[in-house]
Length: 532
Image (cartoon, rainbow, N blue to C red; front, side, top):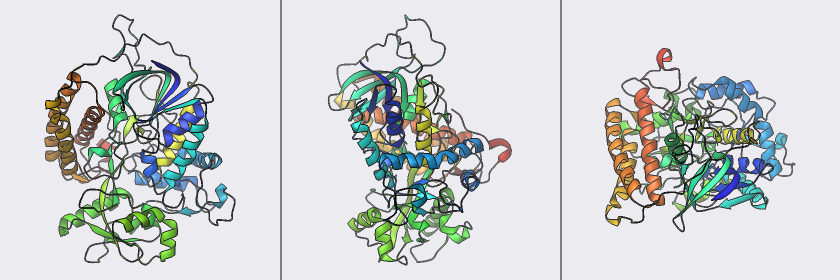
C-alpha cells in the first residue's frame, strides 16, 4: 500500500494543475498509463479561449458558448468559467508557458498575446502557441511537477478501479454515502497491483474516442475515468454528444491526425473533390460554423457524392504565414506527401471529444465523496450539446485549479481496512481472442452505427451487440489475471454502452447528436440533461 494525501489519475492539463496546486497541502501521486506526455492535452493544437481583447466581452464569449452548445449549457457555469479565464492563462504564463505574441519582441503578458479566431467564435479570442499549444502547456507543467519534491510520478501505471464501499471488508460498518479512498493501480511493466490510498482522488483521465475506429485521440483515450466512476456509482451525463472534429487528415490506412480549426480561422476553405465550396449552404458563418454543423455538412456531402474525403484548401494563404503559424501541421502533412502551401489537404471528420461525462460541480466535486474530476472526463455544464472550439483546455484549467483550492480539499478522512486485490493466478491464453477480437468489433459498431448521424434502429442493434460483448469481456476479466488490454477493452465497452443508452434516451436532434427519426430539436421535452 502506498499512502498519499492526493492521488491524481491522468497526466494532462487538468491532472497536472491539480497536482501542482495541492502539492503545497500534502504529498501527491500522479498516475499515468504511459508517459506524462501521452494525453489529449499534448495533442491539442488550437489554443485556449479567453476574453483578452478590448473589443471582446465576457458576455459575447458566454453567448458564443451557449449558442454552440445548442442552449443546453448552464449559463451561470459558463459565465464563471469565462470570467476566470484570463487569470488562469496568466497562471500558465507564470509557470513558463510560451504563448505566441503579437510581436516576438514584446513581453509575455496577457495584453501582448496573439489571438486567433475559430469556429463559432464571434471574436478573435484564442490564445495559442503556434499549432502545438497543448504540447507547450504540457512542457511547462511537466517541468514544474518534476521539480516539486511533494509530487511522485508513476508512469506506465493503469488505474483498475476506484476504492469504494464495493471493495472494503463486509465485516465493517456500512458507510451510507459512496466514498473514495484511492484506487487499485496496475504496474504495467510488472503486472503487479498496488493499493494507492489517498484522502482525495482526482480523475483527470481525458476522453474515450478510442471507442471509434477513426479518431483524433492518442491510444490511451479508452474512457477509463467514465468507466471507473460509473462502476463506482457516479452519475454520467450527456454521453450521446460525441463531437466529431470536421478536419482530420484523411489516411486510407486509418492513421488520421488533427488539422486544427485555427487553419480555417486563418482563412482555409472546405471544398469538395470537384473544387466546389458548400458550407455557405449550411450556416451563415460558412467554414467557421460550430463543429457539429460542419461535421454533419461534410457527412451529408460525402454520402451524396460517394467520396471518401474532401479538401481543406489553404493555398491562398501566404506560404510563410502558414509555415510560421502551423509548423506542426505543415511538417505532418509534408510527411504524408502534401505541401499545404501548394496543395489542398485531404480531410474527413473523426471522433474527437466527449461533451458529456461524470456529473461535476464547478469546483470539481462528484457524487462520490473525496472524488474530484476535471477535463474531458468531467461534465460541468460548460459545453452543452456541442463544444465551442478551444473551450476544452479552458475548462480543464479552471475546474482543476478550483478543485485544488476548494474548502473541502484539506478535510481529514477516516480510512477503512482496504483489502488487497484478489488476483486469479492462471491466465487463459486460448480465450485471449475475446479481448483482441471484441475490441475491433466495438470500434466497428461505434463507427458504423453511432457516428455523426444515427438512426434508432441501428442504435438498438448496437445496444444489443455491445451488451453481449460486455458480458463476454467482463466474464474474461473476472476469471483471468488483470492485464492492461483487458481493462481498456472493458472500459471501451462500458463507454460504448453509455453513449448508445444516452442516444436512445434523447428522441430529438441537438448539437452533436443527430438522429434521422427525430431531425428537429424538441425544447419542450428535451431541453435537459440525459443522466445515467
